[in-house]
Image (cartoon, rainbow, N blue to C red; front, side, top):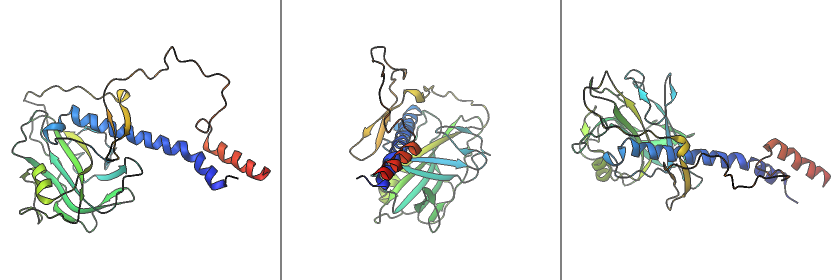
Length: 278
């Protein structure tokens, strides 16, 4: 006889699957955003996150990838939340969080990027990035693009930080906003792989420069794919169908409801009734 706890777990399975699918779609969206905004490959050669990073700015709430903010709106330090892509992703240990100004689309980043945030030894507590006891090299400094320079891309990234990590010379003590090479820092310090990232766009005044046009990300065209070898659920922005059933797909008639169409409470009460009868 199936125990009641097992039946309850079965009842909650649709919710677990729905949450997993939602995270996979959001990861597909952020991957598409990074390519659409040319963060990949201008700043990052590749982008394969194993978790979803969301930034919550006071007074705004959670911002969407690439959301246009003012300097005032993006001035306070955001609350950062991390959601693993799937159950195989562990969020234990130390991490490094960093925010850099990737300038406008099409910019030459060969000389590096302005660093607006760099904290080593952060941890994930209750799904949120905690800086308690961490080492702040560059305390969060809100975006400050030059007037008329166009919409700057400010990228927030979380890297894993192994025990072998060692801050390179010049970035082991507190320092303000300066130009540095993000990719060189990751390599020279021995940081682990990128875990999660997002970005915001901040502009001051009307752009006086020519900015390359990029296509927008259409959420309805995103499709999550199965986990990769690294356990990361990825996706693409390839257009799919309209989401409606095909005309050649036979309609289901007289089919019994499955566990995925019944509400969890209905399944729980049904399971309880079965146990009572038994």
